[in-house]
Image 1 (cartoon, rainbow, N blue to C red):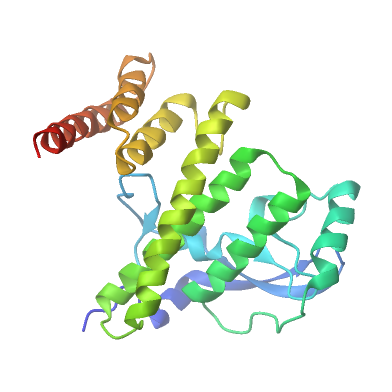
Image 2 (image 1 turned 90 degrees about the vertical axis):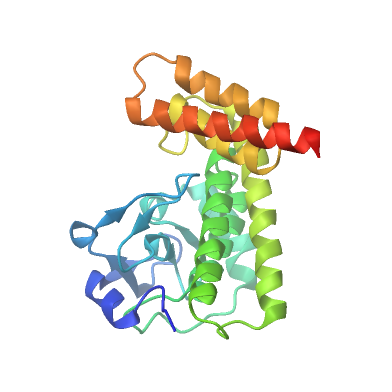
Length: 254
């Protein structure tokens, strides 16, 4: 039986940090990664990050167990008075307090719950559409990681739950794609920390996933034609374009 991530190994890359909630002021422990120790691996085609021994995505959100305020780590300390008012009215008023994190690692189910709460908070706070889209994308990546874990450890998930997670992954991926496409026309770069060429490449991969072949080819072309783009990204876009055209031809001949 092959385990995708070993919990004992993962513990070597985490530490507990005391956090003061920006919304309610309560102090609680949050698990963070020792980024300097992480060893990066080749990302997925759609830029999902990968590291040896640990899925970094599980540690990307801070979630207050007392009031429910949740946000990506980099945004957790930034809360305007208006956003705080909205969080307290729409989130905290209905939130059931839970026990703070006590272990040395975060499992996928817990991480997904934190990200889903962060997405609800983001919508309540009316943050830019791209930030909401990025949370949807990360959620789909998290679910992908959980499914990969189940593939590596047969019997970990019941068949019904596995299928539900597959469907959920697809829904979040679709929501991310639609929102990122819309943000592309409304927001200035960088978007989600990406320059336009990287963003074009991501949209190419996602539109290819949804079989929007012509649009995917166009996004690839944008990457290849843009000046100043790294040779590595151009090569990836060219290889992706060939794959898109091959699948489009096969689908037309079927």
